[in-house]
Length: 536
Image (cartoon, rainbow, N blue to C red; front, top):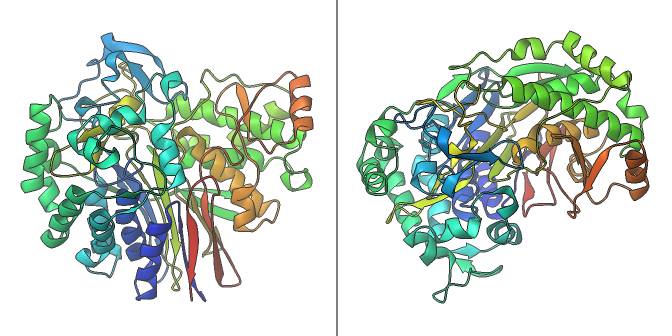
């Protein structure tokens, strides 16, 4: 490799990771510096109150695995705890709206966080830098402040009442820290371009940096603060949840697409739906189609619906339920699904048509060919912030199915299904694409489209992530505002229900690196605020 590249949705975080690469750090070091900063400068998307997974490939040491640090349901949780509180399934088909939003906002919404344990384990097992050195940029930005960006402010102020969930503004107001940090004294939300300071978060990160690891959070004085706060506020998390938290290390799931080997995250991550979609599309001559034509979109839509049906039917935590992804990833299964599309059959998905996007992503490759694709998140922000700690906890309980006996039902210590699909694509033994995205149910279909853009249509990374996308996770065909209206008319005339997004760049936010001739080039999805930096 003649250079290193990092790409993410937040420019401050990318800069922190690039600085590590410039100082001789590897891809994991850079990803961790980036991740800590993301928790400061995009604090409703990720942070030490959240969770995620890191896909790591290190060819010189023979490492290729996925570090899973998913959040776990509280040990006091029970399958039927909210059976009498169910109102309806959310519009995105992934979360559940309960009375008083008790699983979405506040302390009952929180699952045991895994991010800090994941960061520490990644550094110990794969990294080279000093723990406090990696955290220092995040401390500085929390203490001195950073400029509020457009996408952050849009997320804060968007109206989610149509989904039935609490608005982010209400979550920002939920705690005393939130009211101090995110609002002016007169109650107005801080605006784009203003400087946001969070001294309590800076102090917490300093304590973690000085402690040398995550024990302070899971076993020490921060664990005590967290448990005391949850007890006072009626939450389920206690010191036992934190002390017993365990992450996992697993092998990626594999597929292939037109001679490229595709590695992604196993259940409860969404690598298998991503690969299943590619396997179905491989049965069609995609490269001969006009990108964004009615034919291209119809086939993509039908393949996405079939992927969605399988995901909804089977996805869960494999420690609790059987997820037959090996069968779903066979080429025979793909051929059967493709045959039904070719026969003109239309799949029926009992899902609705919006997706949460409370997540972020990092893609990195260094000069030694070490690659990291890391997706981490709050699931959705809970609004809960322990006074004095400064970081917001995840709101992941709303993503569990409150009906017992389902693959995604609540159980103590269980991990909920994740839409994350951090992916690395190989030609032979060489990594050629490092890719992933935030975007809830839209992640796997969006990443798959970008991979097809690069492989079938020979697009650069930037062209691939910027090209118009569609989405098919319901019976409504969602199209971005750059799909031609003449194409929409064809699809409507063919009997499809089509919904045009007002967004120019819509449906997940893919961040990719493509390697050609030993040179890596990164691309940040234009719908977010991010960038890519290459280091010579």
